[in-house]
Length: 114
Image 1 (cartoon, helix red, strand yellow):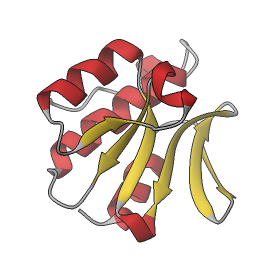
Image 2 (spheres, rainbow, N blue to C red):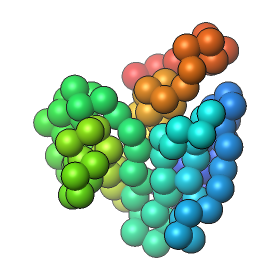
Image 3 (cartoon, rainbow, N blue to C red):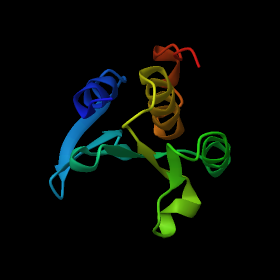
């Protein structure tokens, strides 16, 4: 999966703003970050709940793992893009967006199929 596709997916989310942080694209909604793209490493870091993180890390440990810093215990999760399906990436980006988006903004987007 290409990081350009991931960026397009993130920008498709309502209310998303993109900026650079330490040379990496960061995507947020209402100033709450939900996704960072690490293009050179073919991975993304996104904000899941701890329960969502535990589920994805258990189901697909080759693709998902908690961030190694203390942020990992708060749900920040690394996703390796090298052999994961576009559908799965789209779904977890949507989850991350929903985790930080204001409640009034969530109904403006239909969830993608799992």
